[in-house]
Image (cartoon, rainbow, N blue to C red; front, side):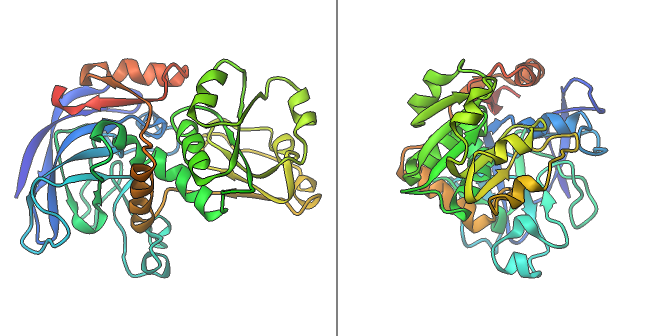
Length: 347
């Protein structure tokens, strides 16, 4: 049995999103029905709706930054009750049996996790994301949003927050570490906040100084323009960790030169184009070029609790559902500070 709910969907690749209805499965034994209150707009929504990474499944309902209220629970649910404040991130299932899943690294499920949208679930049915009024999710992939976080500013944490928290935690950003965040956008602004809260010395590397005042207010200690070639000379060998949030190819050799010996440049942005580098940029200082996905369910809950404890929410611009297409255009021109969030009551 299914229920029909209202949503905004892209009917085809690169087509404007439009209001429609979609099916949601009935609440199963371990499922929760979530009344979605807010849904963040991630740049990856645009990549996928535009077939930027691979051929998509259409009609597509994007959205994997979901915050809402539990409206119904299945008879076997033990973690949540009706009325609880909850969130859903980038995945809604995994094999749950591989080594990674057993280690709490469901994002790296060797069989492939089930994405919140633009994927097929275990029954072969398309998944639809958060640009909708309701979603049904297994309790094992549902997160609890602490009372200290408003739902609107918490929604982007389910992707932007965990995408930055996971590498910062894994590479041990903290006191005594010099950390650079490349790009001050939807991801980068959360990276600055989280790295600062972890106790690291934080530098923003951005194309220009246009957002310098914002970056310093968000917690950065330093702010440099990468459009100024002297920046790379001045900062050579400065950082223990660089996290790149940009979705365009970088001149990696130049950025790797900014690392200390044994430093790491971690990419969380996902360019559509291939990238290149000279391996001597790695060998010279035993430097690492790495990538990081989101986080597992356990780590995502840890991130939400950390952000609540430090008063960290996303900087948002709340929009109506009929402004989604305009918001997409503005994201592509970097005209947002720093995350669009849809008021789902307007769908």
